[in-house]
Length: 342
Image (cartoon, rainbow, N blue to C red; front, side, top):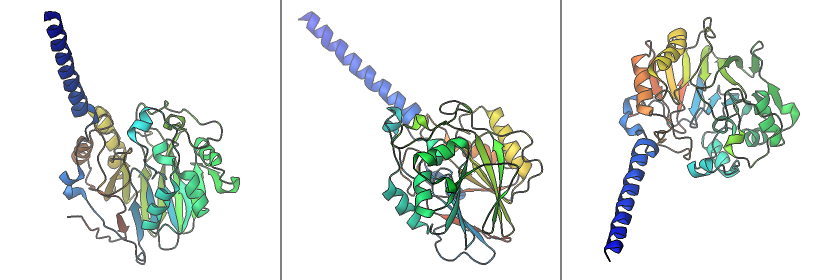
């Protein structure tokens, strides 16, 4: 009997230790790093689905770095990613595929019915998972790296809807002019920096199959508005030395995880060089959760989102800083009076 009692006690100790370990993992790694409710002063914009005012350009957030840009005539999409990929599916490398119902519902909510071009910053799933479906739905041309185009080919997008990115040649889409800049991905990307997708990738496929394939930034100009869309926390030195941007859509995903010197240098190379009037922060929401308001913050193992926000606050270089919740918009005009959330 003493041995039985000892075994019972050891089992009890093991259970307690296991529970404590699980709690520690939750607290330090899996728990969300914060909530949008703690940052009401950063919220801007609102739900806007009416006619774009004369001279204006409306930009609508669909989570992560996905944006719908609308000048009232033509629409452009940046980084099509709406289908949620559960964290467990990602961890187990379960093959995933676009959910057409989710994508179509989101596009209907924001009135995405005049999309003529889709620009993809890189080929990771959280920037490009839904590119083929969006191309089929809209008939838009896909502009991306060779890896991104292989994602589209995997979804049977016709070749005449595919166009490679060329930083030496701006693209005209309706009233928009889009200039491409070669960039770099944030440190330690999934699959390794520069890894490529070398053949058409059909769905379903695990997210590990979505290799980076090169990273790009986009300067979108229309109606006297110059908007730079930066999809990842890294930069090429000197790339923006001669660039003027009124509004910077700035990725802060992992900005709270990188060391403070890297973070400061990134903000100096973007906000410090471009000196935009407005900086809209992107890539701060949990990429494993459905796109719905309020968007949840990253889990701690991905990023410390409040620290990302604080680092931008400290090094904003005079820019007004804000965020857009899911399906909310700002309308940019030469004298834009941007609404701020409560």
